Each structure stands twice: as structure tokens, then as C-alpha cells.
Length: 449
Ligand SMILES: Cc1cc2nc3c(=O)[nH]c(=O)nc-3n(C[C@H](O)[C@H](O)[C@H](O)COP(=O)(O)OP(=O)(O)OC[C@H]3O[C@@H](n4cnc5c(N)ncnc54)[C@H](O)[C@@H]3O)c2cc1C
Ligand SMILES: NC(=O)c1ccc[n+]([C@@H]2O[C@H](COP(=O)([O-])OP(=O)(O)OC[C@H]3O[C@@H](n4cnc5c(N)ncnc54)[C@H](OP(=O)(O)O)[C@@H]3O)[C@@H](O)[C@H]2O)c1
Image 1 (tube, protein in one colour):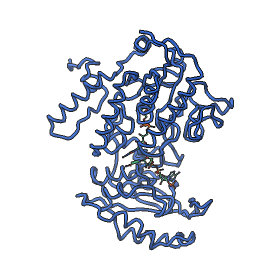
Image 2 (cartoon, helix red, strand yellow; image 1 turned 60 degrees about the vertical axis):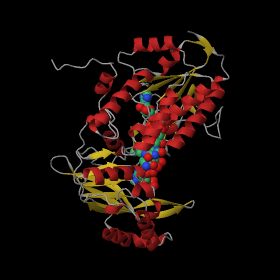
Image 3 (cartoon, protein in one colour; image 1 turned 90 degrees about the horizontal axis):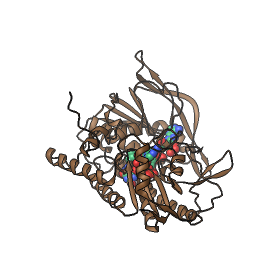
Image 4 (cartoon, helix red, strand yellow; image 1 turned 135 degrees about the vertical axis):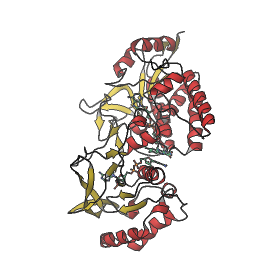
């Protein structure tokens, strides 16, 4: 039934999109959340390490409550964008008065190094999505060998290292930092998960190797050593023989392959630290050395999907430098730098606005602030006659695939709970879209005939 109001599309059901949807619904907007994945949660479901059951379950419950709000409608298994099931123009034609893009950082940051296309080179996100069972990554095979080099030393590196040490139990893991021990970005808590496997003798040699370069910028090598070792204090046994090592002041230069097109080594270029505005930067020195690894995983952050249909600025969607509706001085308005104009009615938030930045709480705050900005914009428009059921019916007619609603998700959650109980595990996840759609009754169960 039609009612006067504002109709908003939120694209992406990660933390930014879901908390924005809640804020908008609380203000009185009618919100439809479109999500590429069947399940909501984004990286809270498919990024956060899979054994953090309590944290993930807490977030799932919050997300479920948001999707049950009367002003919120969920449509999963539907991608929006230039190459998606619906375009931004389709949404405008369907009567959405404003669109909030919270699609996260789905693109890949590539350094363009020789050898990046060799077998055994991966990007952290692919591996993270794989072990968190996001289709189609859940069903792909990743040829991870025995000696793995991870580029980058943030918390994503720590998650990948945890997986390699505790689950795959590979022989050696190298975490490669272009800066030094004081500039690692991982947290103590995340490092502790595998720090017991740190090769302390090698670590001491590594500090010796870079000592002169640390001293050059006033860093004390002994303090640098203590800094890392204190983070490892009290780390529990892992039961894994993997050896974990750091290589500092090293920037990846080239990946070398064998005659089968598989990674056989990683060439690293030495760097030194230079101070710029009180911050250290890595400066390449021209000298190189080689590390024998058979797998390279880039864990250097991500960028937004460049094919979505919004202009980019660096790794993010461009935002209006002179926002009409700023919140805390931040612009949430999509922008066309070529035309020098904002894109009317389109807002961005979360990792779509600032890729690979911050925790769930950061994305939540960003989504809520974007909801404020978007609401200010809506108030400049006349309320329209809104019939969400009719809009959803039009979408179903246009999109030739099963769409997943909040009611369907409840059936999926029940089926997964029952399966977990049957298997005696804390949590069970179906790892293919087909299996999920089948248990929700949205796809016939194939008989194999
Ligand atoms: C490996 C890893 C581990 C992490 N661990 C933690 C942790 O332990 N604790 C913590 O607090 N934070 C953690 N974070 C950070 C946290 O997950 C992010 O801050 C947060 O999820 C970002 O939220 P978002 O909504 O902006 O994007 P995302 O969570 O990425 O959500 C994006 C959503 O958009 C959807 N989408 C994408 N493209 C489209 C499209 N074209 N059409 C429709 N929908 C689309 C996706 O399906 C997804 O649901 C982790 C991040 C990573 C990468
Ligand atoms: N458990 C958790 O709480 C958890 C888990 C995972 C992720 N997260 C959060 O998610 C966000 C993203 O994490 P992240 O690890 O992807 O990013 P991050 O913390 O920014 O770390 C990225 C790493 O990649 C390096 N890097 C970037 N570009 C590089 C290049 N061109 N060459 C070499 N190295 C390069 C960075 O080095 P420089 O410092 O020199 O730039 C840094 O060491 C963070 O906010 C993180 O805290 C949290």
C-alpha cells in the first residue's frame, strides 16, 4: 500500500550499510537494502576470523534485528552496479530518491610487479573469503605451498598468518614490511595467536641486519626488538611446527617463477626510513635480495570495485570536496571530478568511502553519519508516494534469479543451526549459493538424474 515518505536504497549489507539502514529507518525513511551476498554482514560475516564465534554471533544478532525493523526490507543475492543485476539508473527509475553505496572495498590493489600472474600469487581477501566460506571463493582451490611470503604487516596479515600457522601448518611464513618494527600495524592480541611460532633467533639476526638503518632515523634497535618481543609475551602454544619470520625494510620488487609458471622466489628491495612531517616513509635503496618462497600473498589493503559505476579518487569512490551536507566535516556525497559536480542523490560510506580502514565500529559510525548526511539531503525533497511491495515486485520481474528476504534468512539460519548440532560444531555454514538457496526453498534440490 502506498504511503507518503522517502524511499532510500542502501547498497551493501556490511556494517556500514546495516547501521545506516537502521539510522535511516529510525528517522522515518523506507529503506531497501540490496546485498550481493546471500547473507548480510559483509566482512563481519566473511572477513572476521572464523573462530571468533562469540563476536560474530553477537554481530549477526544485531544485524538480524536491524533487518526485522518495519522500515527496512532486505534483498540478498542481488548485485547493483554497471555490471550488476540492477544499475544505479534502474534504482532511480524504480523511485529511489537517494542511494547510499556501502559496497566495501571489493577491488584489488595491485602493485604491477613482474610475476604477479604466476601460480601461487594471491591477494589476502581471496584467502580470507575462502576460509570464511564466501561463495564462490569457498569452492575455489588456492595452491598454497609450504613457504609463504605475506606482503604487509597489518591485522589482515595477522589473520592470514594465523590461518597458515594454525590451520594449514605450512613450513615457513615470512611477513614482509617495507618499514621497520616500530611501524607494524597489527595489534598485540592478533599477533599473539601465532607469536609462539616466531623464530626468535632469526628475528634477532634480522634486527641486527637492519640496525644501522634504524639508528639513522633515531630508532634504537634494542627497543625495536623489545617492542615486537613484548607483543609476543605470553603467547599460547599453537601445536603447529610452522616457523614465522619477519623481513623488515624490504619492498617487493619481482616474483620469480619456475618452469611450470609457479612461484619459486620473491625478490625484495632494501629500503631505509626517511622522516617526513614526523612520520617515517620507506625509501627504496636499489639493492635487492631473494627469499625462497613458493607462495606470495599480498596483504596491503584493498580498493573499491572500479567497475561499479562511480568515479574513483585513489582507491575510493570520489566524494564532493565541498559537501552540501557535511557531518563532522566529512563529505559523504559521491562526486564526479571530471565534471566537478556532486552526483545527485548518491552517498558513500564505510570501506567504499575509505577502503581498508578501521574496525566494525568505524564502519558503523561512518554509516550512521552518512545516514545523517543523506537525511539532510532528503529533507530538501518532497516526500513521495511509496509502495515498497510494488517496487520489490518490479525488481523481481526484472531480475531473473532468486532474491533472498529476511524471512528466507531465518530459514537458512535454522538449517545451519540444525546442521551444527548434528555435527557437534559451534557453527556451521553452507559454502555454496546453491546449497543456501536450496535450504531456503528458493531453488529446487537437484536429484542428480
Ligand atoms: C580479514 C579481515 C578481518 C577483520 N577482522 C575484524 C575484527 O576482528 N574486528 C573488527 O571490528 N573488524 C574487523 N575487520 C574490519 C571490518 O570487517 C570492516 O571494518 C567492516 O566490515 C567494513 O564494513 P563495510 O560495511 O564498509 O564493508 P563490508 O563489510 O565489506 O560490506 C560490504 C557489503 O557490500 C556488499 N556488496 C559489495 N558489492 C556489492 C554490489 N555491487 N551490490 C550489492 N552489494 C554489494 C557485500 O556483499 C558486503 O555485504 C576485518 C577486516 C578484514 C578484511
Ligand atoms: N582482528 C582485527 O581486529 C582485524 C583483522 C583484520 C583487519 N582489521 C582491520 O582492517 C583494516 C585493514 O587491515 P589491513 O591489514 O588490510 O591494512 P593495514 O593495517 O593498513 O596494513 C597494510 C599493510 O600493508 C603495507 N603496505 C601497503 N601498501 C604497500 C605497498 N605498496 N608495498 C608494501 N607494503 C604495503 C602497509 O605498510 P605501511 O604501513 O608502510 O603503509 C601495512 O603494513 C585495519 O583497520 C585493520 O585493523 C582488523
